[in-house]
Length: 453
Image (cartoon, rainbow, N blue to C red; front, side, top):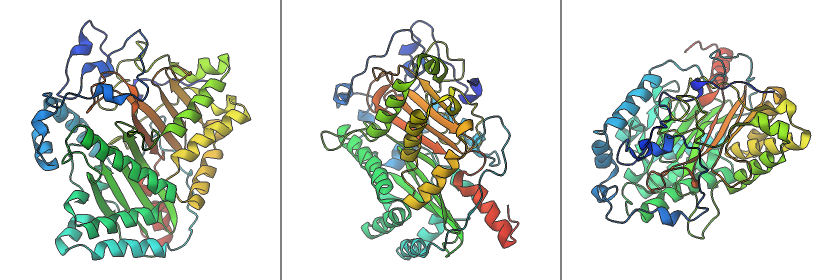
């Protein structure tokens, strides 16, 4: 059982298969090779990311040394490639929020708000963070619950939109209070994963000797709504390879959208790759497929398959389709239906889902996982690339209540021109209108007699 995934799942940049196209530079960091179709297999470098380090004085990196994030971002805004990307993203930001869908029609009735309590300890953490700020900082930090700024997050290290406060501009006390709010809201293991991604960004800054541009505080934090017991409010943390959106609605939690990644995805001997367990589970599931199942699940034989339609590859997003600014994206189902998986394979897929939901507290995770389990027959698993672990790959789990992706990328700060497994992006969304907890907020307001949009 399969479904077609047309060009709507990508953006408006096609893979160029012309001779020499892969040598074209789109800007100082992006080459066309990352979106250029190729028949030959991509050689994996394993975990040896150091062979792809630029020379210290290479013109790709040297001009930026000594710059802070503001100066770097201002300089990068002059780039035509990034100007076009910003125009594209701002056009999406200007659209009223509807939610990711599979067919362009938001499906109602998928998210039933069961009120869970007052989250008094989270309110205390938010009030503690606010208490450390000046009046001017509080004004920048706080936004209405329905603010458009929720959707202005992005992944790149150059700043497109300044939303909230920048951690590296805050005092140690203020940073501790902000991270304390994040820690109080998430599971212990989920908080550890977020901090790991932030620390890997700092490790990257050390590798390329650009610590004032890439560090573990290169992140914006903002508060939305009023932190009141039993109310609806949330916070946002975003920057390079980390974007987390947390909402509590009468004690029911949503952590979505989530964007986590790393380049490189591991540091020297200190820890395994950030998504090692997730990737191993995904490969176990892919390897378990029968020939018939594999024919349905493997949509493209490689991550740069010449059979991909125009628009399926994007020089910034590559294959992932649920990243920044894509709040209303139409993502058709593709791959194999979970209806055609056996129970052991379905259990592996649920293990993957569990890992994507790791940021939620255990009790909240169980509730969200139950939503996914309820839609087994409407869940699809799609794979791009070889299933034996010898190639970079992309996969997506998609149902009416979840979109979860993992994609291997070409280098930005490292010089691998085609995807490698040590540069990884991962996204999570709650489609059909519950990103940023919107579906729950609407129900909560209706119960409160509040008709505010």
